[in-house]
Image 1: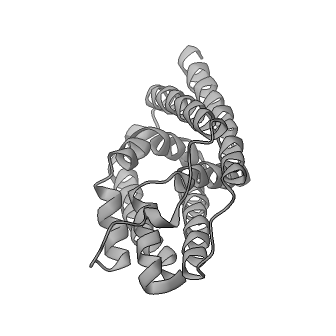
Image 2 (image 1 turned 30 degrees about the vertical axis):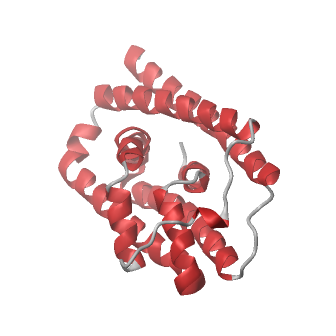
Image 3 (image 1 turned 180 degrees about the vertical axis):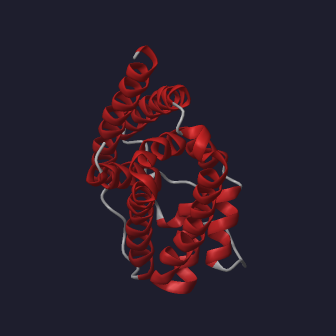
Length: 213
């Protein structure tokens, strides 16, 4: 996987996660009604700080461990399997037009600063932990083939996806506008789901190849 491919794939995979409604996105919608468009970037800043700290900790403590071929292969198989499941689930929900973003879903009151909210909400989200234990760790092991520059490119692609979508959402809420038409929104998700399936197949193939090689 080349550096440009790492950035592009990290962006699309990150965008898929960012678009699916959850506690972080709900917090952004709620804060945007009070703070305006800056709520999106501020919450993303807290979210990104936590993820960067996690990456630094993993790299510092597990760098040698993660360069072992057997370890890389097992992680790739697990990450690929989870991506396949996530891609299937995303496509299924999107094609059923079950996922919607609604401005009146912002029911979570918050007295926390958006940056702190981004940290605490992410840390308390089991899905976030599961994502980094599988997909995130898989990406890190592959990006490490290009050293710290590869890891940095991966992180930039991932966080740019969060920042782009969260800023768009907060700007639309602050402007009092409705979100994307549900069919357009779900169409984008379906495309992202197909991409997840492709990436899952790639990770799975990579892991199996390393195991039998």
